[in-house]
Structure formats: structure tokens, C-alpha cells
Length: 224
Image (tube, rainbow, N blue to C red):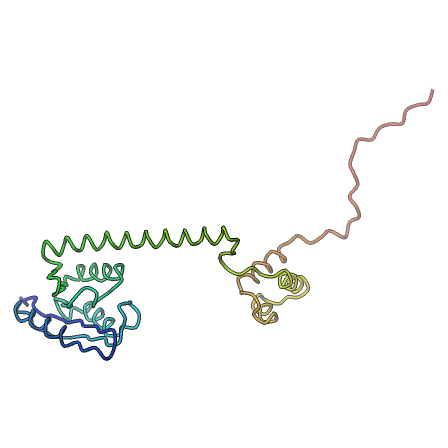
């Protein structure tokens, strides 16, 4: 039975001028003490802590899903991810795959009791972070409304609405054709809504004359 001792190193530096030597030395020393065999290393240079723009991190996650290693070593949590949400997502995936995650500087191993407690704490922090962001967004929207600022998609001008209505009534052009004829001045969804409304309006009944008022006929009174 294969022992689970294959380790992958992940390193990140924010600028190309920074040297990852400190991270490499610390991770290699830990792997040696823990009797882990380093099988791969992944280095993102000139990369921020955000999820986007880190090709080596993407490669690490792909290899993890292919069971290329049993343990991921990082120098500190923030070298792997600054976003609590992404860190929690990655840790959950590693846990599902049976892969250990070790932050060497903080001495956190997700298979240890302290590591499991930290995992729970990170989950709580991610939930708190999401709640705070939602509150800020909601407060910002209320403040914008109070100042009379329109939220959402820009309103379609009355002139454009009139043009779309006229084309919808007098031509058989499709929504896309009408939008192109207007030079893309409004979105396809807005044009489609106007066209649908106009073309589903009941046609005026001009064949019949004015409707007669129905009533009860009374016989004329006899003159005495």
C-alpha cells in the first residue's frame, strides 16, 4: 500500500523582484523533518493574492484532482490565498480529495485537531466576510436611492421607445434587426420587451362602427 508522503509546494511572490528563497528553504526543511517527498513545486511570480491570474495555482488544483500528491505545503496562508472564501473552497476540496494542507509558518496542518479547528474558524470568517460585503452593498444602494440615483440598467429614452414601437408595428423585422437598425443604442432585452408588448396588443376593431348602447325598449305612451 502506497504511503501518503508525496508533497507539493506552492509559492507566490507579488513582484518579479522578490525572491522566493525564504519560502523554498522553509518548505524544504519542513518536508525533510516530516519525511515528505517533494514531487512537484508551483511558483507564481508577480501575482497578487487574488484568485485571477495565477496559472501555477490552477495547475496545482488540476494535479490535486488527479491525485498527483498527498499533501500541499505553503509558507503562509496568504501565500496561497488572500480571499477567505477561496481559501475555504480550496480547503474543502482538498479535504474531499484526502489531501493534507499545511501552513508551515503558522504550523497549521488540516489533519491535526488544531488544523480542524482552524478550518472551522476559516469557514466562520468566510461567512462573516460575505455578510459584511452584503451589508455594505445594501447600504450603498439605499444611499444611492436616497440621492435619487437610478440603479440597474440605464433607462431607455422615450425617443428610442417610440422608434422601436413604430418599427414593431409597421415592419416584420426581428428583434435583432430592429436593434441593429437603431445602431445598438439600447440592449436586445429592452428592444425585445417593447416589440413583444406592441405585437401582442389587440388590433383596434375598425370594421364595425360605434357600438350601440343596449337598453330596454319602452312602448310609447298613449296620449289621452
